[in-house]
Image 1 (spheres, rainbow, N blue to C red):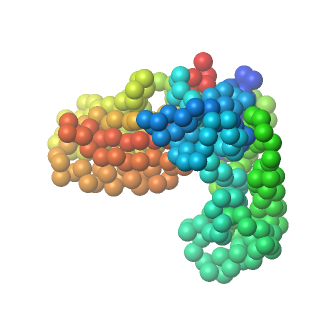
Image 2: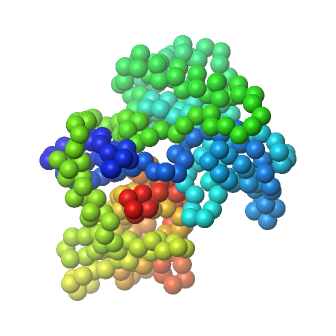
Length: 340
């Protein structure tokens, strides 16, 4: 199946969305039992953790943890937003910096100002978007970011999107309740697919779409540790309790360039491998042997690959033993945990 397809279906009773590009599974979103990122709570401050500079909060979905708590006292109500998924046995990560994100707009109540994606460079288009935003927001004090998907989009669709997000943000900001409450739910997979997969694609909503279009077979392959890199090389992605270990092997290639070839292929394949498996946290790469002079080329390739990935990832650098470390936001739950 050539081209780009977005398939909206279910896995059992879980809502799910798949992005297929030229017959290959490029991304998968599966609903989980945990609170969705983007959910907004009126939480109650519980107890500070002095050593970590944070505080545990009480929410309708259990304990949450907030960093940077200056001026917050136990018993106080506070608005927070789920920023990711919790590690096993840990509290839900939340933030006070609320974002209301949609296909075209991100409303930022606590960060005033109007910004347009840097990828939109045409001055006439930027002026058009500024005019749309000013017409919708008028004198509103909220901040706004116009996303790259605005380029060439219909003015009425952009305006409606901004208005809906601004109205939601205003309603949440006006909350004056006292007890724990969920004020806004995070987006599910079908809405996230519409929101974030904005490139032109065929959208398939027929029941059984995952089976008919090869998604289920692709998921079976994703659940295996091995990822083929071509030419006999491969990488193995194996999560442990402490970190995600990635091992790169050259296979049967015994040439002098085997190591750098396998490592460069790893740089290209790694974002997709982590994204499909829903893996984050500390990631350690045990690369194939290569001369130190080739490290810069590998880092450049790795940086370029992650630049196109939508999950925040920090390239930390080399360890004394020659491993390469990354730190990746836990924006999704591990696929094994979701499908078990």
